Amino acid sequence: MAVRVDRRAVLAAAGALLAGASTSCTGGSVPARGPATDLLEGRDWAHFAGAVPTRAGVRITRLDRRITRQDGSGGQPNPPVNLRGPHLVFRGDLRIEALLTRPAGTDAYLHLYGETPVVYDEWRQERRGARIGVAGGRIRFDRWDGDSDRPAVTRAFGRDFGDEVRLAVEVRGSRLVLEADGKAVGSVPGRDVFGRGRIWFGADAQGDGDGWTLGGLRAMPLGRGRMSVQDAPALEVPRSTDALRDLAADLDRPIRIGTALAAGPLLTDSDYRETAGEEFSLLTPENDFKPQFVQPRRGVFAFQEGDSLVDFAAANDMQVHAHTLVWFEALPSWMRAEMTHADRRRVMTEHIRAVAGHFRGRVAEWDVVNEPMSDEDEDYTNDNLGLRPHLWFEAMGERYIDIAFRTAREADPHAVLYLNEYGVEEDGPRWDALHALLIRLMERGVPIDGVGFQNHEYAPGDRTDPEVFRRKVRALARLGLKARVSEMDVLVGVGEEDVQARQFAGKLAVCREEPNCTSFSTWGFTDRYGSTADIRHYPPSPGDALPWDASYEAKPAYWALRDALSRSDSGRR
Ligand code: 9MR
Image 1 (cartoon, rainbow, N blue to C red):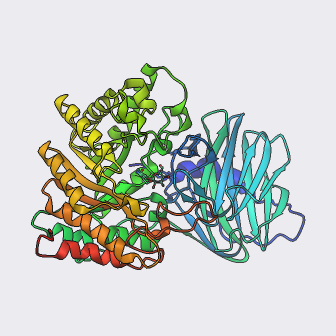
Image 2: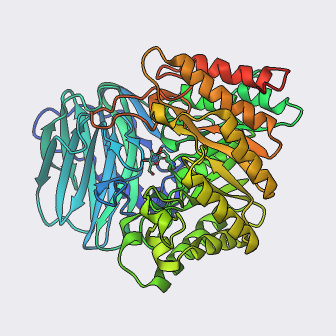
Image 3: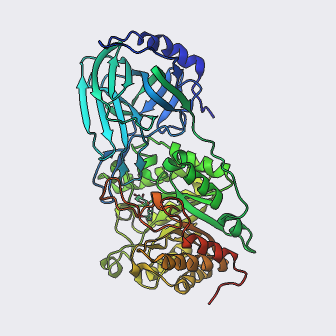
């Protein structure tokens, strides 16, 4: 795998040009420059979404990744961060130089993150950082202060910059001094944006055209500053023999214990990484495999975050339960646009072929169809048979499910294929309609292997009796289908930790006991990054739905899960 940028090629392409940037004329006293460190050569830019290391440097593809909300609105830019690449650790002042080569009409941006953003796919918590680039022939600068999605400072300098621009940013005390093609263009207050002494890199292409090339990138300390470069951490983490995954593997009928994970915290938060690898044997990508991330423009794919999750799983002997191919949420806006029914079908099958094909042989299972059942009563009384009338259904009717599963089976013949749904752990019309759907699918020979029961408990009314859930698992067994607990989280209130513990343990006990239940997964494991966070605040306030709190303290729920795996009796009522 071509992971690293080729040393000679980059040096040849960029060395001389960057060296030219050394003639600074910022007006004031110029601090002495320490030795420069090349940040492309020998560093990992191949796991950076959309980036392709080439002989001329790192090619940055225009991804147009955006955050859209559940209803399809919104459009907050969501440019990738090179989390597996180099980052700077420094004290005092420093200088960063970059060579940007772009076709006319393409806007090229380099992001400098003092703290990495927290990225979900319906919101991105922008933290402290800055962005410098060339747009419309001008040098553009933005600064984020970590209290809003929007930049606190936006400036533009100079004009008529050409296709190739040498940019430099100097962190000098509390100011940022900007330079282009060897000349000072301006200086802005830095407001402690790099106060943590760290800088991660990102890049983004906008405007027309497909992208630009980062032909050089290097950094050096200034004056009495100190600087070093760090690469991403090793993915393999130490294992114990007494974690949840070990207890589950030691059962007479072993099952997998899983959780949903995100590439951002995995690569930047060692507590997250270590607990994830130690405790779990199954990994569901929380958002990184969703269409909005992997196919942000039609035919433009970016799998790098997803690949990092798969690499982490492989390094730690975990399996991947991939999520998800066909859903009505987390879609890039182009996928929701008006199109003919035939084109809609083509978009769906091409997406499945490309994504399941990319991960073929590296993931064990797929959620092929996610949440097909409707929440609206009216969809249960007409011809929809309880199916959600979303864009895929509108184009193909119920057969979208058949087509999706058949296409997924062709794309990855060895993956175990699931339909994943919420609110079907309990009795009622949703479950009845799902059960009837499964019978129709089986009769039509659709290659479905199992059903994931999400088991989200967001409110007291969501709590379901494990024995009712057991009946659902058995109903699937009668159809020859597997079952799994796929996304469990239990939001409670102060003093209700025992309620939470009981709910988690009750479902795990059923899964352990029913022969067709293959795995038990929680939707994240620490409240620090839980999906039930209240995002009306900035930064969001964490929820309390997971077995570890926001400081990685195990809660009673964790000990109850261990208990449910350790008891020698069957634990049945
Ligand atoms: O946890 C996920 C959150 O970060 C995303 O914004 C949201 C939309 O893509 O999806 C959340 O995960 C959902 C999962 O994909 C499907 N079942 C419900 C999960 C929790 O909302």
